[in-house]
Amino acid sequence: MSSIRSNRRLLMAAGTVLALATTAACSSSSTSGSGSAGGAAHKKVTLITGVKSDPFYITMSCAAQDEAKAKGMDFNADGSAQWDVSVQRPLLDSVAAARPDGLMIAPVDTDALTPSLKQIQSSGTKVALVDTVVSDPSVGITRISSDNEKGGRVAADALAKQMGEKGSVIVISVKPGVSTTDARIKGFTEEMAKYPRIKVLPTLYDNDQPATAASQIQSTLAAHPDLGGVFAGNTNTGKGIATGLKQAGKQGTVKVAAFDAEPDEVAALKDGTLQVLVAQDPASIGKGAVDQLAAVFDGKPVDKSIGTNMVAITPANMNDAGVSKYFYKSGC
Ligand code: T6T
Image 1 (cartoon, rainbow, N blue to C red):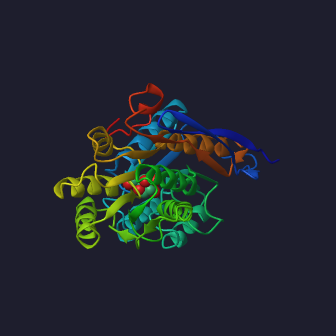
Image 2: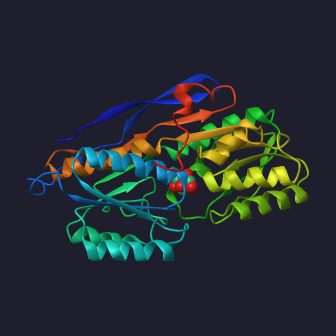
Image 3: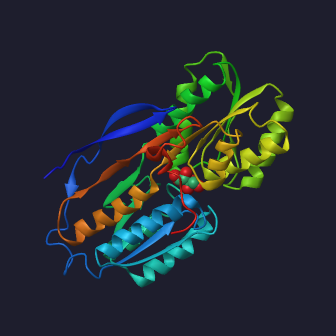
């Protein structure tokens, strides 16, 4: 049975709601037949996030924990100390040994961890991919994330507007091989091509280190004094760019569109160092993954792919309750 869910996606920019009807590409649904014995209650579910201390993943984990508790599941969460395959792999090895009923994971690379994930899946653990994905389509009963390419396009249009549609712009992001940020960069650069008076400089990667992003933006300013705009691919990059611009005395002069809405980014939006945040809905990603695992445990249809909301936040709409609810949390 195929279940098609169409969800209305709202992207708000400066109080303007851009309603984007997005059909979650749940082109087919699958069930596990009779489902695991005993349904969702008391099933053991583990969440492995990309970076444990990142407010994006903290917000996701808090919502997943609440939903798992409501369903009587035994939930635990862990995450890498930094965005690195060699740091996340031992966590996966522990999951393989523990053999939980369900694993929710944001893999930090599109390919490097696939063998481990396939081995965990073949041992009977149901895998839900949250936020990031791997290239191998056989991994995961469900994939839940933002439409990152669309988010990159929204960032490009918002930044171009801030720059008066002219000047040079640079993209700084985490590292190549991350499904989400790669998609944002793709959407951003393709959209920016529509602005002939904007020159896109070569992308820089900061390994998800704010200090590196701060240093990179300052060296970019030294090499390109006319720099007009920056696209920050995620939380730690946005945080670092804000710091670097302040250190260079360029806050507000160089316009910034940043993905995510963790507390330091929100503060930088408020003080005028960042101009636009493309916030995701990590809570819905976490809750949704628990719900899909519960469905498979209960032998019910599973949505293979679910898209979640994004909101473009600016100083003009950041105090609206419907927008500020997307700010990420640093704790449950
Ligand atoms: O932007 C989020 C997440 O969507 C991405 O996959 C990696 O970076 C973040 O975790 C924020 O650090």
